Amino acid sequence: DTAVSQTPKYLVTQMGNDKSIKCEQNLGHDTMYWYKQDSKKFLKIMFSYNNKELIINETVPNRFSPKSPDKAHLNLHINSLELGDSAVYFCASSSDRVGQPQHFGDGTRLSIL
Amino acid sequence: QKEVEQNSGPLSVPEGAIASLNCTYSDRGSQSFFWYRQYSGKSPELIMFIYSNGDKEDGRFTAQLNKASQYVSLLIRDSQPSDSATYLCAAQRGNTGFQKLVFGTGTRLLVSP
Image (tube, rainbow over all chains, first blue to last red; front, side, top):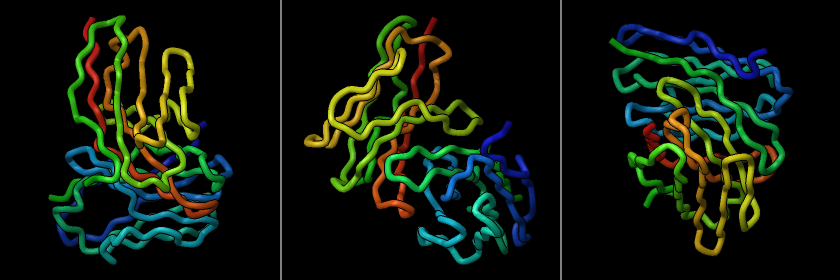
């Protein structure tokens, strides 16, 4: 059983297009996250949602819009894709208790042509 | 200064040796610390977490935390070629429902047969 699943696994698209990535977790966690891992493998948080409410927004361009329809789902929509958006995007979830680890999905590799 | 610093490596050790991975953090408000292993093209996988000063052992892995020195380490005993991966150190701060995980850039470990 996959704990944190995200789709699609790969996304290849042209500059200027709009795309979405979906994430679902079946761990019963209250908090979900989006991370971006760039070509240098640096993993940086983008957004955090707790019980469907936006908690962390790390000065991400407003072309990126997360949406959490319920606490088990967190989607990421990206408008007007740019070359610099090419990266691997990871979804993660955790319990909201202090000290609990985050569990990651398999990642979505986004390539902008 | 980065919030979480790691030597990027590669750290090369022979099979059967002890691998020692180190990490320092700058925010004294950080409460919990995590070690993730990431194989190339895969998602981060939790190895261990620690939040009290001292050592925590789990099988071949020992995490060490020294809050006074703001230093976290991971020891891998009897290193195996399958341990070859990038090891990410992460520091967590915040309160219930509002926690942030900050990652280092990772240390690449190579275990030679």
